[in-house]
Structure formats: C-alpha cells, structure tokens
View 1 (tube, rainbow, N blue to C red):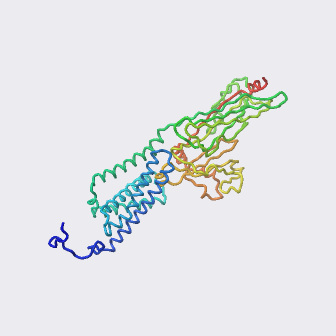
View 2 (cartoon, one colour):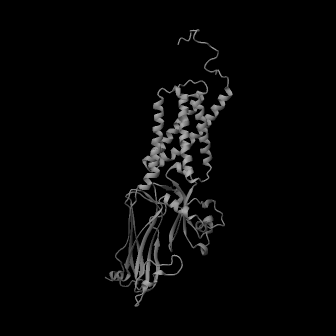
View 3 (spheres, one colour):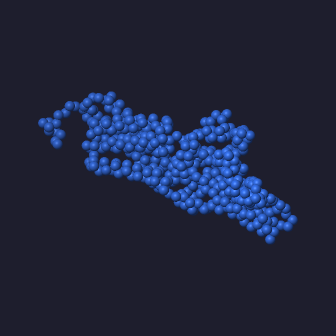
Length: 444
C-alpha cells in the first residue's frame, strides 16, 4: 500500500508510541498482571525442572525436568513479549509468545491441582497453584479476545507443537513415576553362613566365623534404611514324652502361638549371642553391587546351647520411588537426655539408636503436592529393628512427648500406604548349625 496516497490513508496523528484508544491505565494494569503471573509461573517451572533435570534417577524423569526448564525459558521470553504487545508492538509475534507461556502455565497448574486432589492434604503451595490457574484462565480469555494467533505464520504447526510437548511430558511423567516403579522387580542374594570353628587345647572357648553377604541382583538400586544381624543360641531340654508339638499354641493372648516346635524338646529358650549392624542405615546398594563382612562369634566350650541360628535382615527402600535425606545416617541415642526430642526414659522405652530424616518422592511434582514425609528407624542389639514412614515430623514435636508413643498412635493405614508408596520392605536370610558339630570340628 502506498502510504503517501492520502486518498487511502487517513492519519489521526501520533506515531508508534501513541495508542489510539487512549486507555493507558488499563493497558498498564494488564501488563502488570501479565508480568506477575508469568514471573510466578517461571519460578514454579524452575523449581520443578531444576531438581528433576539434575538429580532424577531415570532418563525419563530428567527429560521431564528439562522440559519444565524449557517451559521456564518460554515464560522468561514472555515477560518482554507481554510488555511489547500491550505497548508498541515492535515484535511481530509477541502476542503468540505470551499465549504460549499462558498455555504452559494452565497445563502445569492443572496437573499440579489434579495431583493434589489425589490426597487432598492441606499445604500452602495449593494456594499458589490455584492462584496461577485462575490467572492463566483470565490471561487466556484476554488473549482470545485479542486474537493474538492472527500473527502466527503457521498456527496449526504452533498448536501441534504445543500438544506434542504436553503429550511427551505426560507420557514421560507417567512412565517414570507410575509405570516403572510398579513393574520393575527387585532381587537380592543374601547369605549368613558359619565357617570352620577354631580353638586350641588349653583354651576354654571356641571362635566361630560368621560370614554375611548381600548382593543387589535386580534392576533397582535401593537404600538400606536399617539392617541387623543377630546370632541366637537355642537352649532346650530333652523331653521323652514326645509331646512338644502340643505347645505350638503358646499363650491365649493374640499372637501367642509358636511357628517352630519339636516333639522331643521341653523347655525352650533363645538367647542373643551376638548382634550388630551390617552395612549401616542410610547406605546404598546399587544394581550389581555386593557387600560382605565376617564376624567372629565366641562361645565357651561347655556351652549348653544346642544350635546357633544366624539371621541377616535389612529394610530397604527403592531408589526409583524415593530419596532419603542426607542427614538420615546421623544417629541419635534415646537414653541420653541431651538428645532432646529423641530422648525417652529407658524404663519406659528401653534403649535404642534412632535414625530420623526426610524422605522425598522421586518426582518434584508429587513432592510439591504432598505434605512432607519422614522416616524413622529404631535399632537395638536385643530387639528386632523397626521402620516407619509417616507425615509426622519429630522436629516439631513437644519435648514432653515420646516419639515411641507418637508412633504407636499413628494411623496404621497411613503407615502401610506410605510403605507401599516408597517400596519399603524387608529381606532376610538365616543359617542354623549344631553346636555339638562345631565343637567336634574345633577339636579335630
């Protein structure tokens, strides 16, 4: 068009710095709200993507993190684009860039709100998600009214690119967070074996080697939450009546039955001969990694024990489902008053070494839509170790409350649900030998 042809062009005055609608206040308000929403969405995308892109366990999770970081880049580009579109419009596609940022915000906040609705736990972040979702709906209505897509040279390709990116993110998220943690099996090789005993003629005792071994023979790396090896000495009196099987029912109290009885055994007693930790709480066992150790068990030659039973067990958590806090391996001693909230009088609670820390899900989206979870483990040489995962945080507990009492009062359904969610389970192996056979081997 010939701009000098006055029959076709009518100038009302002004240049590119002057808007003909003379509604400068309204435009400035729109710009301010657009910038505020885009900056909030930018921060949200960086927080989600930064953690997953650099620290996620699987490639799919890292890919999702990279996509969220790219979404943050789009939000950052949308900041000057919003100013340009409602000001001088020097950039041809500034409106389309703002539209892309708004669509990403709408998709992200919708996903976050959907994940939050699964648990419906009150968290402060949900107010931010809801505010950004409402902002994206408002911004989208403004952009639709402005018809910003008219400046896009290939609008169908633009829509196809946005849809493909959303589908790729959803598929990667579903694969890494739902499908793989559910179907990927784990497998361990555990051994607890007794070796050749050693002694000499003048010695009143014998040394019995105990070899402990564990190997991650599956496809999932794990955390060792708590582990334990215990050697039990089995003491029993010979019974000529042969009616030992009748004692399997034990007491009338719940759980008062015996799973292992023998016909010619009378009074039975099991004592702890040796106990200790294996690899240590908070350690890891990667795919194909193995760990072994050897201990020496000391017994008097005149011992009355009939058999020795060695049990190796540990509680593990799958790394494809969660991550333990780095400070989890820092133990606390329950019998020392200076330990603060972890202290509990020995007469009431016994004596335990306590491990406590935060546990994170392997997905920033889920961590942002859930209350924090904490794992606590209790170890003692004379008791079976225990592990719990729950939303209760002992750091905010009153000093007058015992953490043992708190855990007894926890919701069993929540504890079971969290154990399944993070793949918390036990594995064990044992070996039993005759003490008389060991003494004969030592004498030879």
